[in-house]
Image 1 (tube, rainbow, N blue to C red):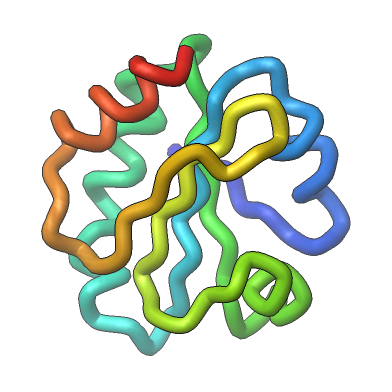
Image 2 (image 1 turned 90 degrees about the vertical axis):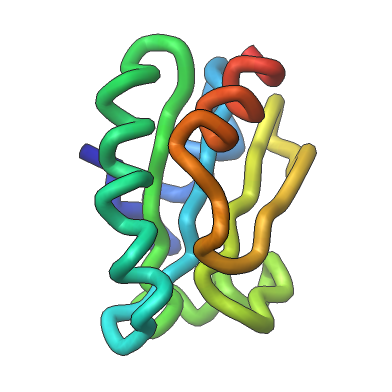
Length: 106
């Protein structure tokens, strides 16, 4: 299961993480976000210990959405050593594609 991130724990869970991190910026009202949600959770389970997978609800964490220039959701950001290394906008991505991107950063 993916971690739930907030403004309060983003620094410790993502920026300071020794593992690569996939962050899914989403919202409750977003249809494509709901479609990709189970895929995100599967990746979290499959790569436990290799990478972190987390979610940010843009309605609850507006500061993070602004900081990372979230214009369209779902927005998937791939972090390594506290920096954004890659991104995917939209829900048209497979579990294997997400896993490959994370494993390349590990």
